[in-house]
Length: 369
Image 1: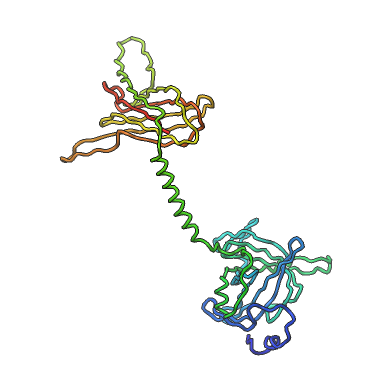
Image 2: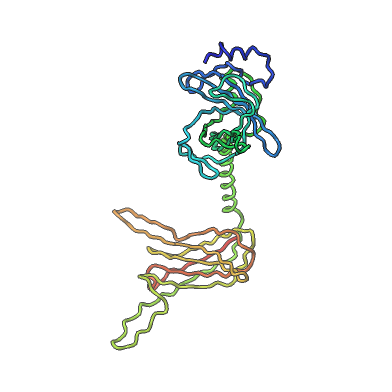
């Protein structure tokens, strides 16, 4: 198509009576590494709740790659090309193309309001099509089905055998201005397929969040605390039962043994805790090449609310190849969230290695707020 000859050239000489295209007919710009020429211009609209919304479409052409479109709405631009209908899968309010899921944005009857230039089909003012747009920024997947008059039924019907799909990619305003060397109106809204323009703010917010987290943690750890409970416990060894004489009745054990482990339980007196204050529980034990495991519960006497915690304490040391080594720690601490104000009984369930040894470990429990 030659925009300098024939019908298009003639249209350019006529006195304009319709809307002025933002990009003049005959303009050329490079897309996909090839020059494309604007050969057609139309204005279309849809109606929602009695209000009609308009947008502009520009048909571009290059003999090597065929037809493309530029679509402008409220100052936003998209570069559009057709896609094979067989490659699109619709499912409810979404559509899948190229492995990507698009969500429905709008579904309405689009009407041609103005036409100028040349097109690859006979288009006329008043032409209708059902237009469904699906978005996955910066892309918009659009489906159009022509609406034609059915004289036998005296109503408009969809021409289901003619379905057209296209894929638009959001194109920044400055890029369109540079390509066509024109000045264009700035956008007045946010486009449905417009990418979020302030992605960098996420990085700033993430950095601020990390700083706030460390400041809060520092204040939490180093802030003034009061000890609300401290107590030491010495657990008693449980002798290994002697074998019963032949013929004597067997007495079942009081507790179940598991290998070299045995559980003992103690309860504390009520501990007053304040509300809106985090809690630190510290456990210290004189373990020597063994371990002590404490499982605790803070139990609200009035409501029955239970806050669990664990204190695994272990310490091992020795000499290997002439070098001393050690691992673990005789002290462990755990931080608990704030609990409702009230009195709490603490239940401590302890088990340790070699529970039947003559000198079992001693453990000290401290609660701070």
